[in-house]
Image (cartoon, rainbow, N blue to C red):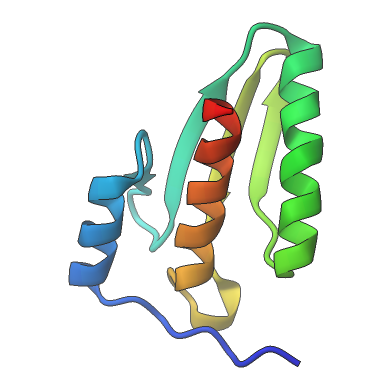
Length: 100
């Protein structure tokens, strides 16, 4: 069993967000969000499938929705009622899949 994630401080969140292209804080909630736009539905769904495998390996799952070529993602760690390193790692991996 993995150790319980630790909640990030506001300063740590700011530091991590400086390195996460396109991720922003969610207003009214301790979470981060990003909109990913792809060429078409097939490309968006292929990316989501890759992310789903990563999220399952991490046992940390995004809140997301998909409409045609647009994927809206929100990350938060419910166990800490805020953001943890898991959110930052998953956001970085999502960004890396775009860059490949």
